[in-house]
Amino acid sequence: MSFSDVLTVVGGFTLALYLLKLSWRCWCGFRQFVLSEFWRVDVRTYGQWAVVTGATSGIGKAYASELAARGLDVVLVSRSDDKLQMVAKEIEQQYGRKTRTIQVDFNNGQSIYPVIAEELQGLEIGILVNNVGMLYSDHFAYFLEIPDSEQMTRLVLPCMIERERGLIINMSSEVGVRPQPLLSLYCATKIFVIYFSQCLHAEYKSKGITVQCVAPFMVSTNMTKNRTSNYLVRSASGFVREALNTVGRSSYTSGSLSHALQNIALTVLLPDWFRMSTFLIRKLRNKAEADQYDKTVCRETLDAKED
Ligand SMILES: NC(=O)c1ccc[n+]([C@@H]2O[C@H](COP(=O)([O-])OP(=O)(O)OC[C@H]3O[C@@H](n4cnc5c(N)ncnc54)[C@H](OP(=O)(O)O)[C@@H]3O)[C@@H](O)[C@H]2O)c1
Ligand SMILES: *[C@@H]1O[C@H](CO)[C@@H](O)[C@H](O)[C@H]1NC(C)=O
Ligand SMILES: *[C@@H]1O[C@H](CO)[C@@H](O)[C@H](O)[C@H]1NC(C)=O
Ligand SMILES: *[C@@H]1O[C@H](CO)[C@@H](O)[C@H](O)[C@H]1NC(C)=O
Image (cartoon, rainbow, N blue to C red; front, side):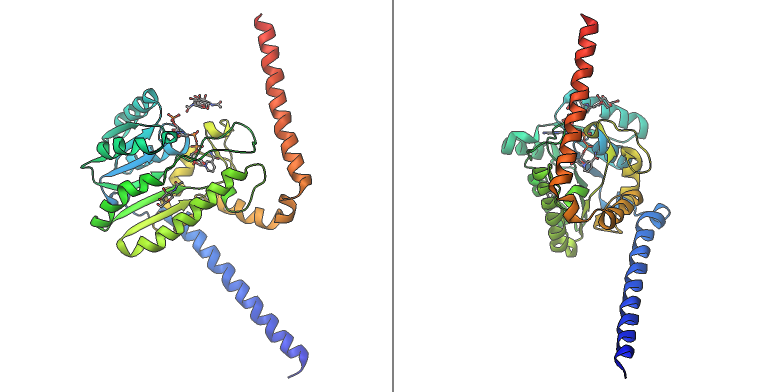
């Protein structure tokens, strides 16, 4: 066999392997985002109640509504009682499911967990959606805060293990997949969520518990200034409908087909060295400052008019 024959064999083998991997990925994506629309896991089999943290707005509210639409009763957890009552009423009227509300601030540390534990007592909790991430500054900032939401899982996991059935959904983010300058703490906490979920999934799957990590790109919510939704920026309800279909198909997901494709595009088009370059960081920062400046000028103009 000549040298070029060897190269041909190696090349052919590499290509075949690559194509095999590619078709496997395509099939997984197809199953996760397209087939799942027609072939859904019945979420009611996890148990009667779902607990959703940060359930009064955005992605959390969409999860609460969609789970109620799929036949679960929901416990809503967030800071403001008025918003909680409003969302609870909306869900009861629209889907005819039971609701409970728990008003707590996840920034208040350990003291809130006895309150939550008492409220959850006696409920058969099948699903926990850990959606409250962290406080988010309204522009690119150098540092942020995480509440101690790890405790939520501690509260519900033991009963799930006893029933050998349970689903825990953790909200991470695409910025948790790779380092993102100017969102340093935010993205660091999001990779924490990814690793944490993957480890817990591995540890508890033999006990009937699924831990799913959802890492979206941009979803139109209060946090993203109600950006108009389109094919790239998904609406919260559209996003969650797709994300819930992936339950049982994937323990780590972008949540929607659009976001999965954006993940691939970003990997190919925006290499790490460029994303981490001082050039791009300055561009991003300047743009954020310009947006901020526009807002200030706009506000001042309005104030002047009112005077
Ligand atoms: N939107 C996106 O593009 C995007 C992308 C990737 C990941 N995510 C992740 O998705 C999750 C939800 O984001 P979102 O965009 O839906 O946000 P959002 O619209 O601002 O909603 C946040 C929810 O959390 C509650 N909340 C906030 N701080 C709280 C606290 N300290 N204690 C208790 N409740 C609190 C809020 O209710 P109250 O004000 O009543 O407390 C509200 O219901 C976050 O983990 C975020 O990191 C979002
Ligand atoms: C992520 O998932 C783990 C396992 O379910 C859970 O213990 C933890 O509370 C979650 N973390 C966050 C920050 O949501
Ligand atoms: C949107 O965010 C602002 C500022 O953080 C907050 O005051 C307001 O209550 C939020 N609105 C909703 C619907 O959650
Ligand atoms: C986004 O829309 C909600 C509900 O329509 C509103 O309460 C909230 O103030 C808006 N947030 C921003 C940042 O414009």
